[in-house]
Image: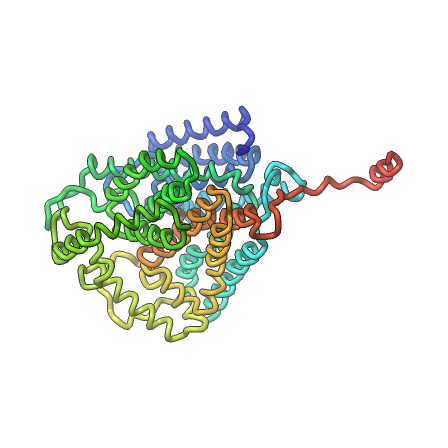
Length: 522
């Protein structure tokens, strides 16, 4: 398996200086110095981007998105994890970092995306081989669906404003859906195909391991004010709600490697990483993470090929069924303690009356469904709040009626059947190509990649249904990369466009005199 060309000394030097400056700026914490450091780092990073393949830059950005703290996603403690200032600049709007930059209603990532789009355009225009060498074509329907998603978002946005939608609120709603197709287009134009699977695996496992270890550290060593009811000083959660997607995707990756028997290393990966992922997920204390892991495992079990591993698992589950049933029945009405905590998790998912949070979200769903019914074809539009048929208890979240916790029902309410379909067909296309590749690919690594791509879409849907996952940087990068991988795997396995062939760049244009000379020489 070939790899990217080694980084040049100039690139390594530029990135090293940028890293050192970021550390110094974070330690000092001075706003004015931070702005100067940010500008210098920006120049150094852009220089490095111009010298490496776009896929390298996209993987680096994905790693940073996965590991950097995002203050806008909540801060469970007063302690700032490492590189919080970098996460604030890269992941948040810059006008929230420094009020003197009130004009900057964009993030550091937005600026870097513009740079990457410009680099992609210039290299394509000049027939550069830096990005195109060895790259497999992406199925054209996926690219078309990405542009359809972008066009649909713009159409819904414009028509919503014409119907009197609030411009400021509409920007927040558009922000949640516009990035996924854009980042997908960057991934599909830069990833080569299976050659990049190993690097992507390192990004996912490396970032998930770091976040899991960070979560375990926070809940064990960082204290918060005592809870008035229990007296506990343990944080309610450790990193962020959206890390549930990262942890669940890493679980799926390990499962796919084992189920598809990709090699002897798969079992070692499972022995090393599964305990870390389990401890980190438990430390982060987000019930949706376990729901994602459980449902994805169940789905993978049903769609994966029959194997000795599945037969052993089936026999073990059948043997344990009576014990599991007795355990669930015994702990169904438990309220406290760790013994029956898994049972309380199950009940909170299936029984809306089990706790106040579940009931609140059930009432929110009622309002969203009522809003959708008022205009099912085109929705109420962006910039319009959902109808509060049932008055909800107040929450400290001013965007609630524009960005509800259930993002999927929210999409139905704001965009209607037409908008929802045209916006999410890209997601369905990713699942289609992933499953098409999985069912016929002979290479077990291809099948594993297809399972991870499929699982990532399901994880994103579950997070968007349950906890504001739509538009989160973690979910958007995970989803867009997975759809691009699904398309490339389908091509690599011969399930789209015939035998897989790398894209051949066009020869450089010649002048008329040069062409005549070449003809005479011939």
